[in-house]
Image: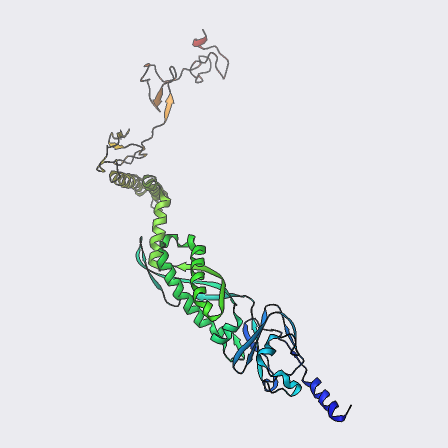
Length: 386
């Protein structure tokens, strides 16, 4: 072998190189492999890993795209060589080419949000202003198209280089989707998944021209103005109250408790008790009067119940008199002879007329229950057993 041949062989070995990219970042979309004078020599090895694509650009045009695998640039197994047509010069090839590695993995947890409120016409609250935020996942679906339309000749293209444009497109599609779906503000939380899928479809229709695809789209929260949220809280509170009359009675009981804790005590406490019962009863009756079927409500008036203390008529079911504050429910006891229900403290039965004073044992004077034949204290036989 002549000296010239040895020099030529050494030069050829010098230019045989391995073209590969090991991504150490978490946000790189496109990386241009540094090639000396953009000249790739015959015999170079190209290694494309999973979640990567290698794009050859020759004289400013995309010549070929390589999927994961190992390739030898020797003119035999790479379609790019037949397209470029410059490898016939071998080692001294004047072909200049650039190699771009495109990251095709999914870029997750990318954030989006509305910088300004979105105006929405709502059936319950009228015109409301919404704010929203969430996350999405993105990947490069068309490496060649992405380089042509977005990355260009950028040697190191990252997600932050396109993040602003993507966010603006997402907010625009979000506003359009939420307006078209006309979801009431009270039901938005139950429609996050459906709304997210609708928005993802709209976004991908736009992003396909960039060579990008949104694989996942999440809505984390849609918030309303404080005044609307306060109105929603009030509506929820009214629903939780249920029976307004029972709520008024509960309020009256709270007032009684507070009055009992008042250090003034004495007459002030008594007045507070009476006022609490009276106010609670009046408010309950006023609310009942405005309900359908109640007094003044257009229906049949409910039957009244007389107060056992003052005789004033009160609404059925009332536990305290609206006039005097007395207790409406009177404890009942059975008649000592016939068992009829009598008001506690009654001296005679309204059914059989018998006295309600309990009989006493003739031996020890202990009170005897109705029908007892022997005294439970001393065992003396009663007149009933005689």
